[in-house]
Image (tube, rainbow, N blue to C red; front, side, top):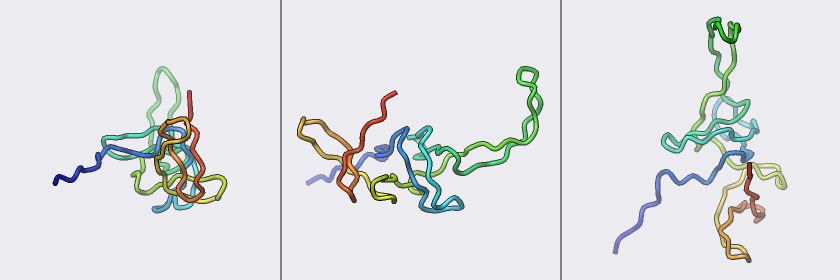
Length: 117
């Protein structure tokens, strides 16, 4: 009997999801996912994990100095933020009445609407 391993790159969080940071220096901060890096299992969350970068003056932008940029944070350090509960929750998959596979919040049982761009 063979056991099927879960794909290491299967991530339940997607771009546009609202997440809460559950560990690290930014613990408790809430923000939206800007980008997901599947190969490194990291996410870029707006206004979280800000790093200081020193920029030279560029001929195109004429801007220089010290700027704050967002750095990726590991996906294990964030959790989906359920607005109805006001706290973090795990995400599961199930088939709804229309025979469509949807994500849902495991604590509240509510379906998560997909963010369409």
